[in-house]
Length: 348
Ligand code: PMP
Image (tube, rainbow, N blue to C red; front, side, top):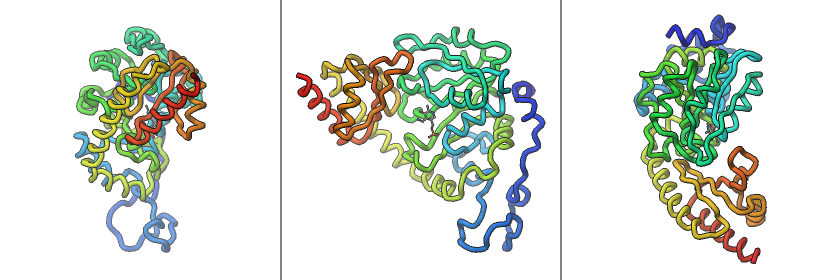
């Protein structure tokens, strides 16, 4: 684990974390007078478990990892931001990623005063792993790899990701927000092999819980210890912890939802392909599809007038004239296809 220490920002290595009331005593008691809480309005009057012990135990069993390999954050966005705070020195360190990819890696770099280096994908959204590695230098600390990638939808081959994890001299965060929609295996199964690997997952996509804000980072216990040091003391509220425990009992529902989304996705892609205004439908491993059309701005605006909102990604690297369409319910996709028919008729 010596190497993890070397990558950690010096002030964080030396940090004495805040010790909360619930950190100092977490056993059984009948009178709680240690945290300046109100005695009224149970159960909301009490601070939540700062380390989400029960939830992590359940999650660990479900994902085949150990509880000490889990950090929980207010969405995986929190887990992304904290990686910068743990590993990057403002004005000195840099982070690397591909382009296009999920926007928060760069925003978090900018917030933290960290240089962000982007390596463009090829036109077909495949990755040049050696170019990614060549972008690194002695100050590189983080490498973000979103797979399946947002907004392109493609997952990267296992061999390419493994090459990056083994060759990059720093932390590699594989963002698996969309992994449940992909045939690719999760990297969770290989967590023990790579002490520098962080796997990011979320309750926001397949688990249908974007509104509750719950994300996960899975990593070696040494990395999770640092996460626990820098996070806000009570970062996951008690209602969210309870809700997540209930959700974990509904894995069968989630599997059904995913199957449904996948079947709607393949039907939608098939139906979409007959429209001449759709120039390209990129292959997808996610719950969205990136499409290139002849005038993304015009189609986007038309859909808005029809009450349908998609994401215009035209200004993003390699995504000129591209719209990103989330796969919703079957009837929602039918509404979009009908609106597309009217768009075409209207232009004729
Ligand atoms: N990673 C990727 C690739 C995403 O697309 C998103 C959200 N769109 C996130 C992370 C953030 O997810 P969360 O809701 O867990 O913060």
